[in-house]
Picture 1 (cartoon, one colour):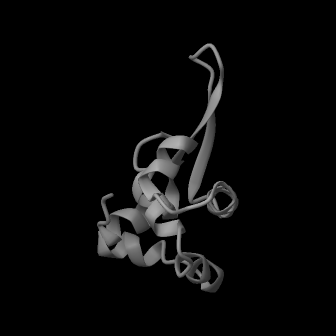
Picture 2: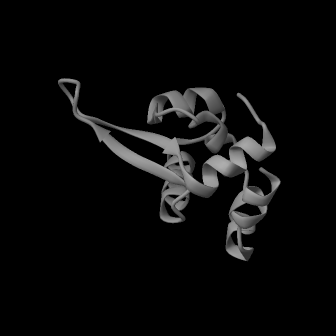
Length: 96
């Protein structure tokens, strides 16, 4: 497991992202697919704009996957940690 973590260690830009306020707590809340409102509720003080920006940055790095759930009457996006985001989540062991 430690070898996988080292292989997936973020580059300098990735470390800059991890040092920000919200990415690690967001990754902790997205172990399973989660809706925007669920993530926001789990973080408390985050603004919609900060959450949206953080989700976008994580998705851009391919640490988070955004999928549209069309099983409901009104389709909605869900977010889930993937790839390095999932490895970071497990390495830190943060659970919110």
